Image 1 (cartoon, chains in turn cyan, orange, yellow, green):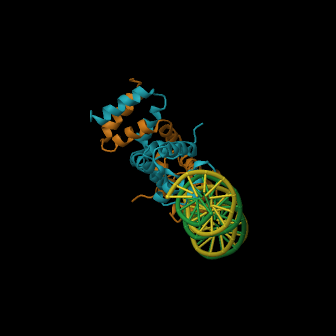
Image 2 (tube, rainbow over the protein chains, first blue to last red):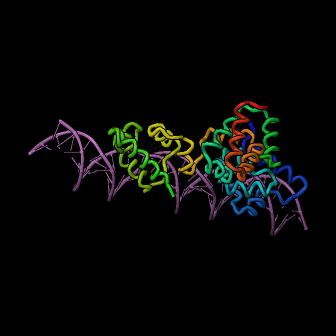
Image 3 (cartoon, rainbow over the protein chains, first blue to last red):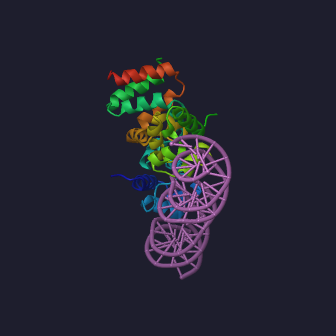
Length: 117
Length: 117
DNA sequence: GCTTTTGTGTACTAGTTAGTATACAGTATA
DNA sequence: TATACTGTATACTAACTAGTACACAAAAGC
């Protein structure tokens, strides 16, 4: 399994290949956390960071925030808010997605995005 | 605003009108928590309970679990799992729901439920 | 009129979260 | 060869979560 730390480390090291600004220390500094902490995170020695810190990390490494949050077992709080506003309705919709193939979900996404309602 | 505690208290007292088994003490006993705790929860003196305890409460009061969780600022962990499995895709869909009216979401729900894919 | 039941006040707590702060040895660099 | 930068080991912690345990006075039930 590709863990949170594993994913972050690979991404950072890949960026570092052609840019020395992506050392643990420099990334940690830009994020505003201790390098020792980021090191532990990358080696999965501690649990993934908070949503806020994960967002900073996603921005820093230029990866999809939702994907990184997912790897950390979390769901973005703005999505949670959408659900909480109409729980009965939205919950049923999401449960329905469970057994749908990707392409069908994608069709739904397009339908919604194109405002077909 | 109707808070978690407020909602629970009203629901329990309503049930109690024609059934004395819905006293704080008895409900708490069936749920496996201290009556003093349930009392504090109902008066919003403490934060809403954990997801597990909220589920028990929803079952006990016969209310929609998703709705009760929403009132407690949480999202059911099984919904979170659906999102985490395909974060990029599902996240976009959910964000799209934000500006849709209820009836349009309902149409989507039906579409998904009827397996139109 | 007594005992049972009720809601609540007060005091306490184990476990978790999300990190910080410092020190140290290895590597690159100038 | 000095010095600057690297990743990491170790030790610590404030705040929060999700409650428990017990005591008490009022009300209800028989």
